[in-house]
Image (tube, rainbow, N blue to C red):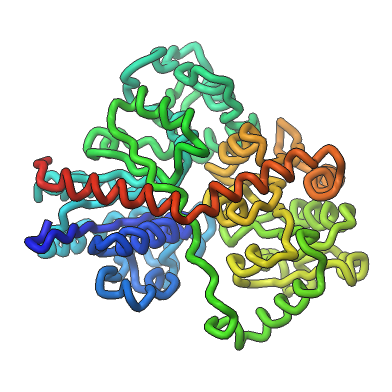
Length: 480
């Protein structure tokens, strides 16, 4: 800590927007409390971040390091600097390139001597940097406490022993709550999700929870504390279990809700024709009547999956606002949707292909619910407005998030085939109507409105950040 009492942290996010965005929000929240942050990433990713508020610019230093090129240029496109830029099968090569940043980042940290290094996933080489320079590490989890509890530590500190009996198939480990969860929990993978995880990680049939993605024993042993993007009001039960089994402090930092929307005349969006068209259409809809449909840029749909989502939206009969990223298999924007979809939904829905200001759309008074992937960041963005949730998860953490939301009575999960994960438009339509308009969904809608008092309480979440900053100030002189 500097002589003037200002704490300096280095923030190292993984090269995925589901990580960089919450790390950036975390950095802004820390800067509001007077912490100096060095946010380290690559030039293209830095350019894609939101603008830093002018009053905080002196405290947030965006540090660019060019992503090193691999010897075999065919493995990774020259302009690829994040997972969104590449197909899933090339993410491993992105990790190889990211690891090559170890030396330049070490030189930077050696020169700047931050008080803390805040570490995301996929950077276990930071452990060596922290040890060599005697700088303590903090593990930042952009995931829920429930996910970390489901995966578990390498050696739990209390409660039942890890299920490491080689007679227990890994499929069973992944599809059932762990033995150290001593309350009713729905948080586990479905069979089709577990098969995807097993294939992706090349897990053996007798693998243990230690080998699961996100569990890095090198990091687990080295960090001083874990900071989790959550709060006790939402995950108090899982936070208590986390404390019991990990044996290290877990500090909830709040939900990091998005910054408040600026008045229209202050937005750069106001001059964009796409936003003007979307805004005008939303203005004509009844309050809380519209379903927002959006799955972000990381979900890569097959043609059949996209067709079933479109059928579900069509069959629901509900007004909708769909932000769709054009699939790679679509030759043009028209080809991205099933034939006849536009005619069948004309007058009650709007499809926008490409980027759109999701934060502003979700804040509009006409939006009443969301059909989405259950990503944690999108969940927070949505529930701060009290929208009902219909969840259709696709990748790693989303299925576990979906079970958590259903467990808390905050979402309906679309029914899927347990063997292959397939789903039908009819099931999507039924879930949407139950959530938005049916009598059966009244309690769900009431709980979503009550949840807004927690997810949207900026003072509450600011208080978590203040508590975290107090920890930083009180403990930064402790040696590694």
